[in-house]
Amino acid sequence: MYDTKRVRGQVVDAKELPFQVSGVLLLANGDIAVSGGPSKFEILIYRHNFKLQKGRRDTVMLVDSVDTRGCNVLHMLEINAKYLLVIGHLADFRIFERDLNSPDQTFFPEQYSLAAAQN
Amino acid sequence: MVKRETPVKNSRFTFRGRFNDTTESFKHDEAQYATRHQPSVGETISMIQLKQFQNGHKCWLMSINFGFQVNLWEINFNATMPAKNLDDGGNNERISIKRLWFDIIDNDNWQPFCITELRNQPAAVGNIALGCGSGTLMFY
Image (tube, each protein chain N blue to C red):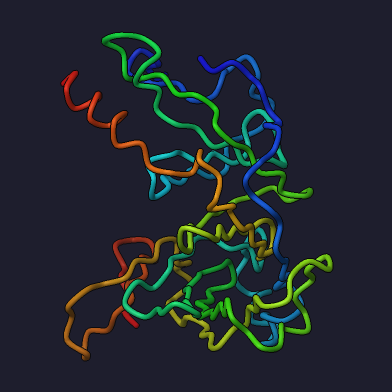
């Protein structure tokens, strides 16, 4: 029996989990990409939410999602800051390009400084 | 718990191309597969980006798939001519993916499941390690 009490942060709502999570990738900016889970053909990108609740750092917020165009993504690679490569069933490669001009893609040092201070 | 809010509006990710490997990669003897009882031949098990070999325009990946196969891929982000088999949906003009090399692992039917890049190893050892079950490691 799996002890769910040992799970500190639950990324995906179990009540809305119709599909197996098939891939998890920690991105270079600290975000967490999850494929599968709530939506089979979508990659959800979460970020630690250091400001939401004092003293709790095990919460995440949804900051982006990728429509995989019908691809059930099994593996993900962040090639560089711009490109995300994913592989679906039977070596179905797909490349997604990230808009680097979006302010949400920048690294937020003040958030991480806050987390360090809370430690 | 996370409040479900997807699909996120104005996603920062744009589809740039697709390459389906199923017809291109598996040209070796089909009978070889038939003797090995794998559940889904051709399914990619794991993939890594080779950090030691990359530049601003190209990068190289290695993948392993069911069928005892290890592959080396090249992605060119600045290609003058895109790969013919890259289905780009009409919005990509520069990215190409091609397979440079593959090998069929002769390993007493131990399917590789993990792949990692080694650093600072002597050339005789190799740069890539595959974990193939029952404690078996293979090096490339």
